[in-house]
Length: 139
Length: 71
Image: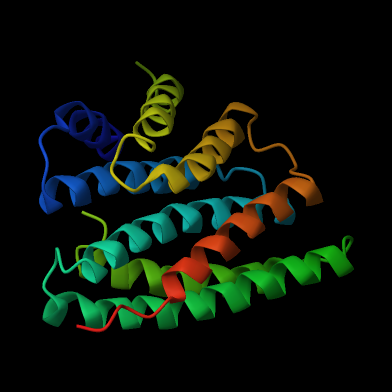
């Protein structure tokens, strides 16, 4: 609940320009998707669970692309952001492999429990999220 | 305000904010999916809906994987 109130407050206070404001705005959206996605996951139906993970990851990916673009334009110092972009790219490859594997399993085995493959996707996403959170990609 | 009302309010704010935050237009479909998922109490999604989300993350992944321009 505190996180939700913080998101409302931050959304209302969004104004001005500059990298800091952009990254804070990114944080408002992505943290909001993350917070709501976490609460919305009540139903253990695996395809739905995977879709929620994919949607939440999509929010983080969008933030990572904003960061990558700011880095490419040298709005953020290359010496700071280039190593972070490389880490995000490596983590994204892992998440995409895990998500595609989970989706493929669900498509080919609609009646089998896919919890384990979805868990692998969640672990890969968590690693990506940690890099993003630790490096100010999402503020 | 109970938790459900708060979440509904936040989901509206997030969906509205995504396109106006510089460069974050691509987050809007994901925000909308999560907001709808909440509204529908996480009813089962179809293969087609999952595939739509997957195609969007594939596109974003392609963009993220592009090497940075030379310094």
